[in-house]
Image (cartoon, rainbow, N blue to C red):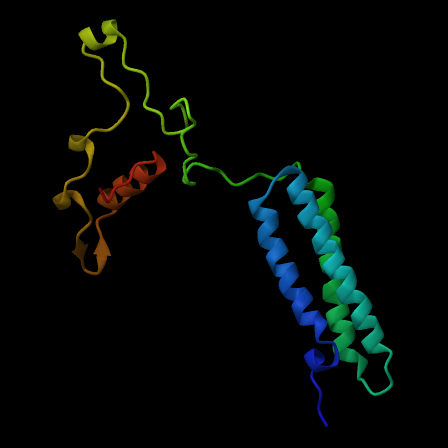
Length: 170
């Protein structure tokens, strides 16, 4: 009768899914939370290693698959160690395109309007850096298909608008 690794040690695939979720968690967190995710990753790797060692020494099991999976668990434990040690040195996700914080009771918040221009700059004709409706590309300025490829200058303008934090679809 042929058995699979998952039928011999059913917890290993579950721990692998935990490790995969931890990999995403390492990217999305920072500071103490990132270290905690790294510790959870190490615990998942240690659990996998213990289960695989126990499976590899069984007389009715070919140890080849268990040794290969054990090597993966050891790599996982090493990666978790690096994550715990160097969590503060890794870059974090930016909040630029994240959901805005709700306004506080005082009305000040992340989306609070900018203060009005001073009278001097308004009288001198200075304009703000914020784009207006006329600055947005018109429909005719958007990329058109020519031989299956878009115009690169129009496409570059759309990417530049995204880089500035603008929504070019408006």
